[in-house]
Length: 506
Image 1: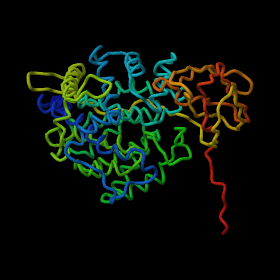
Image 2: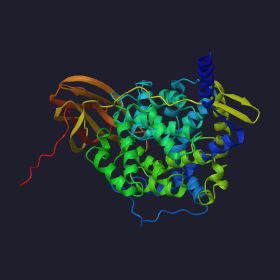
Image 3: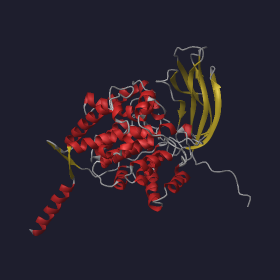
Image 4: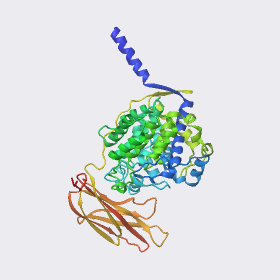
């Protein structure tokens, strides 16, 4: 009998520890902190975005911050805030259709939005506009940008509406993240969302980083990269630059995003996530240091401090973000983000509404001012890998107009042809139709619009070919004297990693 009573006591205590109680005021404060932190970080890092590729931003390089800066940027450079207005597309769908809104609704909303997109987002949009719906729209066979940072920078909403419930945020990510990403690109959003979720209920930022990583499969390269960052932080706790060098040596090669292959440019989710984690770990709860480190790591240095600032903002709460970083914020909180009808003040309210709905949906309770959250232990999502067995082999400059066709030979198992459709002597848009032939056989017929929003970000690609010499031909079916299809580069993929071909003289 005593054993039974003891067992019951232990079970009850364990169950009690799986609940977290917070006031509605405090929850709202943390949600505000998450959204405000994103805006602050994006504004701070904006001037340095992709200006420092493969190098850190040295200490002597000033990064401006002043009273009125946020409002000035929102007014004069509104396109900078894709980190937020992309989130708001999905927030609005939830608002219109409820928490069970299908992936197709989110996909159509973002594909038909007025904003410009790049990389995985634009490939996903083009796929959707041409009838390839999620999850196929983000799959690596249909999206050469699958590992890019895109979903990572727009996944914040998922964690902010899932306080203490990282597995629930992962379910949202599964639905929306596969619209435009797969593999490491998808994992970037899953991990960021989990850190947001845990920031509501953790008292230590290291716990947020470490526990959040449990949602990522250990077998993935993404997990291995972030685990390395955590280990290097422990080894060099007072020297973020040494950790940066270690990351650079092991993880700085972009092996999947065509633009980053054999280039200093890196938009890969894993590397840029590493810089987010660097900011959080070396910042250790200090907002200023978190901003500095996550920005000065370089590459996508507006998105990374935006993510780090958002997570830390949710961790601290709006009220505890230092006044210095909220200079001029109040006067910007009623400005609608471009391409939306929502301001920060709007999303503060909507974010709280959705978070309360998620709490109740997942077994929690709301009683007046008191909110009881049924906490979730982070569980890994399914293992997936983009471009398995495909390795960069060659990047060949082409710089030719397809008039009306172009041929190229290569040896390997895959390729990406980069380029775009241009307007020459007119302002009118045009939609090219083009055929791709591989070894004399028609592989596909595609639309290549000149219009920016619907453009085909990468012109052609194919993977999983037989490892041999191939002849590729692109043929434009409807040439135009006022428009052109211009190809810039050919990326060739092989089935083995590239090795240095030089030999030591010793």
